[in-house]
Structure formats: C-alpha cells, structure tokens
Amino acid sequence: MKLDLFAPATVRKTPRPHQIEALGQLRQSLGKGNKRVVLQLPTGAGKTFVASQIVTGARDKGNRVCFTVPAISLVDQTVDAFEAEGIHRLGVIQANHVRTDASQPVQIASVQSLARRDRPKADIVVVDECHLQFKAIREWMRSEPDTVFIGLSATPWARGMADDWQDLVRPVSMQDLIDAKFLSPFRVFAPSHPDLSSVSTVAGDYHEGQLGEVMGESRLVADVVDTWLQRADYRAISADLSRCQDSNSYET
View 1 (spheres, rainbow, N blue to C red):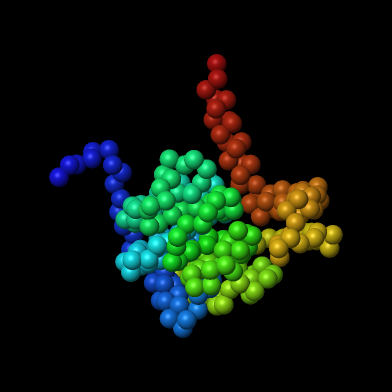
View 2 (cartoon, one colour):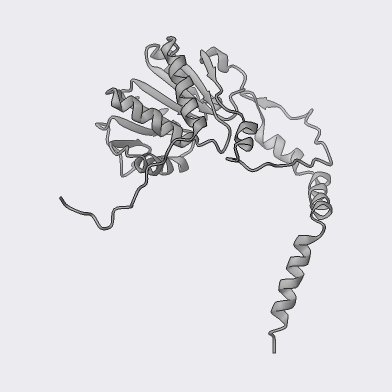
C-alpha cells in the first residue's frame, strides 16, 4: 500500500444529538412522500456537517447528489468539509475549477454556474441557503418534479418559499443549543431603533443598499460606541492604555 506522507490527516466527526435528530426528522419527512423539504438549523448547529451526512446516506443507496452553494467562496470550503468526512468522489461546477469532473456522483455547484450550464444528473439536490430562492434553483425544482430537493437554512422565512417547498423540519432551536452549551449565551443591547419604513424588500428580505444607508446613520453608529463604553466600563480603553504605557517604558 502506497503511503502519501503529504495527504492531510482527517478525523471523522461524531454527530451530536441535535444533528442525529435532524437527520431522523428529515428521513421521516421524506418517508411521507415529500420531495421538497427544508431543514432549518440555527447558525452554529453544524449545517455543513449535516449536509455531509445527507450526502453520505444518499451515496450509500447509490444516488447521485448535487450540493449547491450561493457563493463561489463556499465551493472549496465545502469540498474540504466533505472530504474530511470521507466523501472523495467529487466534481465541481464552477468556472474552470480544477476539480471539474461531470462523471463524479457528487457535484458541488455554485448557483451562478448552474444558471449558465446544463444541470448535472442528480437524484437528490441539496440547496444551501435555500431562502435566497435563486431563479436557477426554482426552475430546476419545477422542471424535475421527481427529483428530491433538500433545502438548508437558518432563516427559511422568505416570502414565496411555500410555493416550492412542501415541508419544514425544525429539529432544534438556538435556545436548545445554548442550553446544551453548544452555543454561548448572549445579550442584546439596542439603545436606538432604526426607522426601516423607507426600506423596501426584495424576495422577502430588506434591500441591502437601502438597509445599509439606514443602519449607517451617525446616530446609530454613535450609540454603538456609547453603549460599548458604558457596558464595558472602559475596560477595553484601560487595557489599551496599559499596553501603551508598557511600550513607552522601554523607549530610550
């Protein structure tokens, strides 16, 4: 057996209880005959790892899988995450990516490239950030009613999603993860409230440019600074001053 001394060492992760529950509830929904299922997982729940388990399960049954990502920057990140979990027969659909190989049973595709190319053959399509509702994905779903689509999202509340998706699986909440100590507890301080009445919506979300203008108002930005100074009891400034004094003490 040839040993590759430069191959990265990989340690397979052990699914956490909420991830096992997520996969179980997803199987139950698919078992009822649903072919368009959204799996809601809070940020920090391990969405990409759960996706790798979905892909592994599909491949164990001989199914071809396409995993779509909404941004080019996520392509290589997903390749690395899947390979770390033992998924190696991968192809990539994104520009002239070095991993382009249509013969592979698992394809990782950027939505932007899917809109310009022939769709890969897939029995199951896993759609990351499905609430973004890309036109290329919606057209794919509507043209292939027998293909299973699994959507992943922390915020599956965009207007119109019910037109394409049949079921929503919500196995765990953010509070559940905090209580289980998988996420850190947090507090929110909001001294001022932005006026969003003039901000329009696009596909169920606030218009990014208009929202940026409102949230960048000097009053809101100033409140962020004032609130930090008040709540932090000037600890950050004291630490900075101490570092400066220590540095100056060594000057000649």
